[in-house]
Image (cartoon, rainbow, N blue to C red; front, side):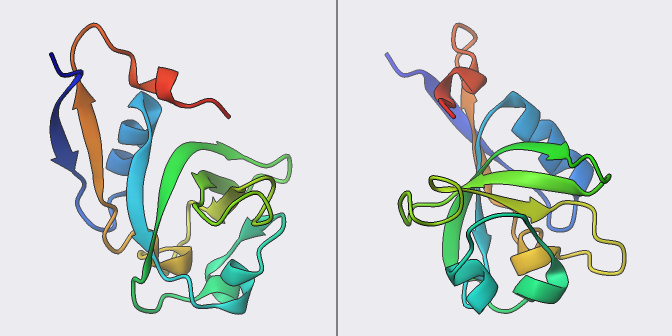
Length: 129
């Protein structure tokens, strides 16, 4: 008996599709993690200007999305680098980036896969943060 019945991919630079997938549950993505802003991230929303759009060399999980009180849209991400990265392992990457379809850290270049669960499983139950 398996609760994951398959996997779906998301097309590059397709923010609405990625947002719809994240609304259903966590999505793994590859990012450019070589910038000092990404490596030393502590708080705030990372932008393309700060993070760049270089080669994909790390994987993170998008666990949500939202908007700051100032109106900046973001992806809420979970990194595997432990609690000293970001806010207890959680970070925020700008979501809508006009003129930069790949997004900060190239998060939209290859947006990755997400699991398709059996009907009796709600994917958002996997997110504890």
